[in-house]
Length: 131
Image 1 (cartoon, rainbow, N blue to C red):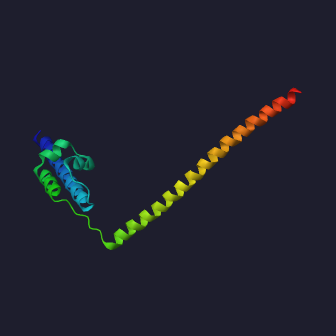
Image 2: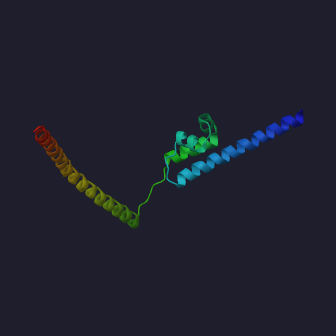
């Protein structure tokens, strides 16, 4: 019996070690990507339990450390230029969309007028066929 329990204990320790490594890796990846590191975000992304991230002293310490010292995103001139250019393109697209919508309003009026004319012509036909 001792052999069986030893094996179970060994497997449990290996699983705990892998879970810890996976969670630490997730935290480090989140930090490198500039993501917001909270207990909630870590346990969701690492797919571990809430109690695990709160009760494991190493994991808890890392989360608290990165929460106090978040990574600062640095923008250089090139990245700002790309953002500006992208927003200019988006503004152009939106202006075209506004123009299309304004023109479609004119079509609505023309459509309503055409419907009125159709109704008038139908009335004229009714009158013409009565004789």
